[in-house]
Amino acid sequence: MGCQHHCVPTLSGPTCYCNSSFQLAEDGKSCKDFDECTIYGTCSQTCTNHDGSYICSCVEGYLLQPDHKSCKAKNEPVERPPILLIANSQNIMATYLNGGPVSNISPTSTKQTTAMDFNYIEDTVCWVHVGDSSSQTILKCAKIPNLKGFVEERTINISLSLHHVEQMAIDWLTGNFYFVDDIDDRIFVCNKNGVTCVTLLDLELYNPKGIALDPTMGKVFFTDYGQIPKVERCDMDGQNRTKLVDTKIVFPHGITLDLVNRLVYWADAYLDYIEVVDYEGKNRHTIIQGILIEHLYGLTVFENYLYATNSDNANTQQKTSVIRVNRFNSSDFQVVTRVDKGGALHIYHQRRQPKVRSHACETDQFGKPGGCSDICLLGNSHKTRTCRCRSGFSLGSDGKSCKSELHAVSQSVLWLGDN
Image: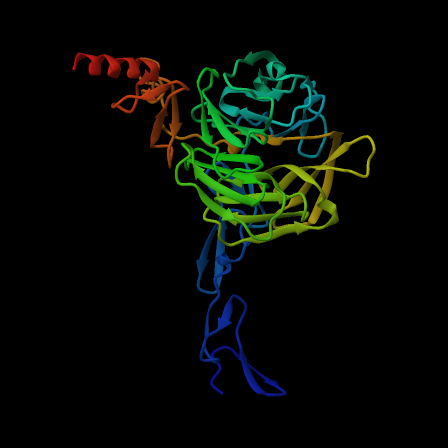
């Protein structure tokens, strides 16, 4: 019959088949290489296809494991292992990835906190402390130097109300805070001292929930489960907004990014699944679905695992399970720990916030980020930036300085009067 590899008799006659890592070509006889790298999860990180085989490798900062597929993050220094930060109704607690307590870190007291993030390079964790009123809801930050407990707790006075903030994310390159307000239906961003805040998006947002950043690529990803549930992406300055997912989606909540492979994971709290697409919204894939992951809230990813807070409605005490699932093999599933009404969770490790040599919002010789008077936002990469002005001010012709709109109006009135 002329088969290139093998021939097997079947009821309908002889049929050709190929060795593993090859597939039958269109002529039904010859064999061509099968690209294993097109299959999700073939390698944890980098996959290089070869004729009849493939090789997995890891990016800088990770080590290939004995399975020749998985990548493990290096701890630098070695005494700084990854830890899980979990926000819940009473405190922010720290555990090891197996759920064991970090002995040096006593939980820091909070109130009704669902929004929390960290800035690894500054050894800082920040969270929204929810008060009884708008004025009592504040942003707090604390240091956790060398994983030795929460110290130097301080309040950052944010110029906009945080009372309806559902989630937050810190741009670790600039220090800017991104906030999701699900009552006023907007995403806004504040500079690191909280003085200048500007609206990033407020159109066609109906119930925004989760947010995740990739400042090295200049991207914001967010979920919205209003009248048109969706996962979206925009640049760090709010430009180039793009829908990634708007089908088979009802209550998208938690969202997290694989920064190495440029993948977006999100959890749907109604359809009870975790799914993934790439940064372009393509190659959608279900990681896990079903009763094990009902009502997922927070979501993060590290190495081969996804971690999530799972509000257990069957439990009258409103306990939350913190679960861990292998994103390449969903049968590898376990409950790591349980907390009171958990919210956001993050893996505190340097590989979750990769550094760059320099970025467009570095401070100039006058101490102004990116040369901007008020706030510098990264653009569509870490090498571009946009200056924005606080409310009541407009950007000058130089694209950096901010002028009072009232002053500009009075100047134009004076000019008209002279004429």
